[in-house]
Image 1 (cartoon, rainbow, N blue to C red):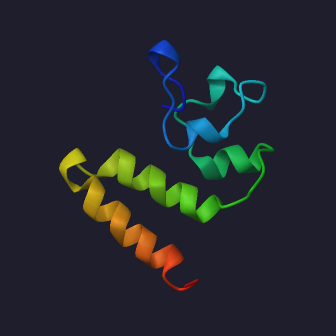
Image 2 (image 1 turned 90 degrees about the vertical axis):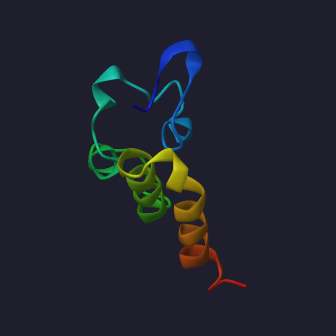
Length: 77
């Protein structure tokens, strides 16, 4: 979910301003939100973050995020 209780937001949800956010966005993939008009900046990276959050156990997040960092950022260095 992009928004949760007590103002909590997921990694992708924090990239949606309160003015842009609509409850109908919940359970939509980032790609669908871009198709609906959200800016497409870093779309691939955000989708990968969503996959880790939604599909991997919390115990694997650090490993998977490190793999993602290497994929996206080591080529820049």
